[in-house]
Length: 458
Ligand code: HEM
Image 1 (cartoon, rainbow, N blue to C red):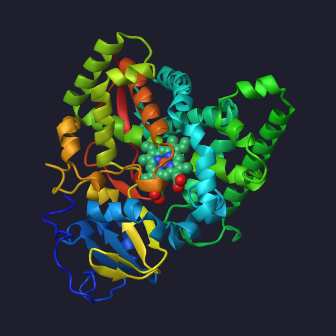
Image 2: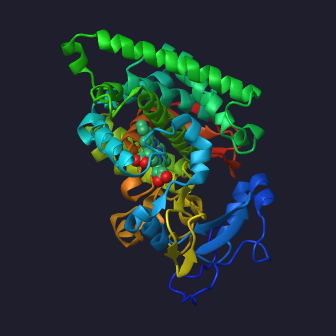
Image 3: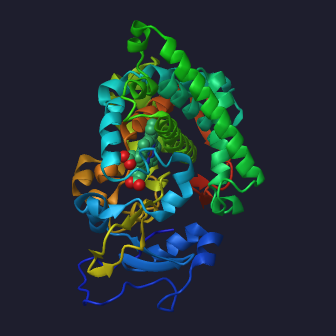
């Protein structure tokens, strides 16, 4: 499907007092049922709407889709201080990670972001390269020639092991015992198609009980790890380069016990499924585009000649970089960014009040034919320097933008490229799941069916 057929430009004059066009024929129509039944189709109806500000009404909340890069830039960058994450995100995630970087606002957010930034500086991230390739090689060791692999669970296990090691320096047994059950329970709990997503955590539904149990186990494990760290001598402690060691080196006021848990859980939730989905979609697209896969293999063979890829090698692998950019364009795991105005604002000439929910959908903007030729096609070659220099800034924003852009962007891109390079050196993939891929909008853009690939020794 193509998101935008023609598209009314933001430059079209709007008369003061005009209201944005709305989904449905009536001026205020309740779209709750349509949204819950099939969110993806709901988004596509917005894409077909030939307007850059489109109103809707879901569960008593008035919302607006913004689909023009200029409007995205206005909200995320130019006027960022006029917007907050908003009630929807607070309601959905606040119980778990309310004190984490993703949800904090204002000065407290700024203080935490500044304190955490060094954990994601280039130099620091680069020290994680070997962990990433080691775990990717271990995943390849688990695959056999001719086997059908279910890509998503395989990539979930891989990215979680990497996060367990780089965030907490724990071994894969601890990852499997304390992190995996929690993240899997949270995925179910946050699935908007289930009743649990709308009930507070204290309501004893089976899934809530599972979440509470696994949260307690996670906290107990974290307490054990922290206690063991505190017993370490200074030299051992200083030699550590995981994220936890940085958090523990902060003063108690900046990083108290509750914040520490919320921050680590934020990194796990924000960094785990997003990256494993990126890798799963990459395998699906490579399997279904053999010529592109062949070119990637050629680049890997010529550049690496069978050696394990390093961070430095990534500069010599431009095609791999384009493949990843194109995967994230077509299947952005974060399929939308949500915001709520902190005060009345003007967007595209329309006056919008502070109670409105703003939806800035990568899913639609990344497939808009105003910016992308043949937008539904997987074409890594479109990412030339010339193309990038003419593309409007916020026609592509898989990692968000402005002050709240993804702190883990460099980590995620490096991890995805090292994992793809390591595994693609050893295996070619063939499609078992055929296109078109059925998708579901959960907390991330997820496949509605398993992504199965057959793996062949190279
Ligand atoms: C392909 C993988 C990833 C994608 C597509 C992605 C996407 C995003 C997006 C779109 C945002 C902005 C949300 C907003 O403005 O409301 C964001 C924020 C964030 N991401 Fe990522 N992310 C990825 C990987 C990671 C990783 C690996 C980590 C950490 C290890 C991480 C940690 C975070 C955090 C903490 C924030 C909140 C930043 C703040 O508000 O200051 N992400 N991510």
